[in-house]
Image 1 (cartoon, one colour):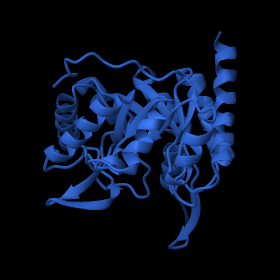
Image 2: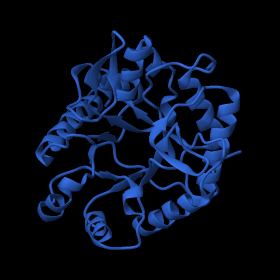
Image 3: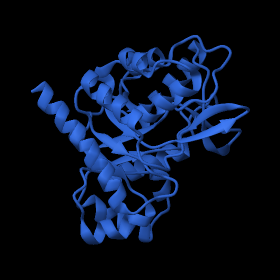
Image 4: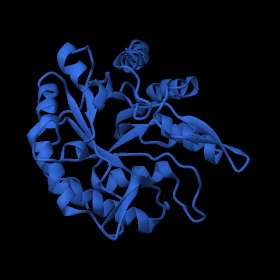
Length: 288
């Protein structure tokens, strides 16, 4: 195993961006608001043409762009869908995103795509599978990718490798970078009962190339509180505080605000991104 031979593209500047969502596309094209960068789900653009590509091309002319995939199924024991990877490769060649990422999860079984990012047992066997799949994707794309930590709701009975160690080993073996989702850390910590700050301290900071922020929902299931990573509300105060600790630990990193359900007006996302930029500026001032 190892990192791909192709040169690594330059990383994004350490500023805040937002996820590109359909209700905001025309407004962004028309008004060109001050946004550090935009993130798109490449699966939304795997058709051959039409208005989505016209719009994405217009946006790419004005903004840095990253691709955040949801369909690679990096944890699939059946291996990677070569057709899906070829489509992603073609899109990456067309739009030249600065970063490409996906999740530590699986979503394909028997050729059937499941509309979810399903968790993995953190075992040596699973690590070998994910490493092989990440290697295959990076080889096909000719570039490295980032892998995002998941949000979790229950623990596997046998999952002996701590998640930060699993991600660190994955990065070491394959050369991939890490996308640290601070909201996912907080959600998992509250659901499973661990200290999110300990998780941050165990993450290899030199491997973290991007940070995600999002809102989550609080629900009650079977008499207990459960945090649901629904990306449907503002970033909560506890996640902002954890984000500040992450910046103190790792230094400024490109930071994305995600909002996927109950999508608000564009101004609301821009305000969240401005908040992240203030944290980034404070971090730069304190470390200069």
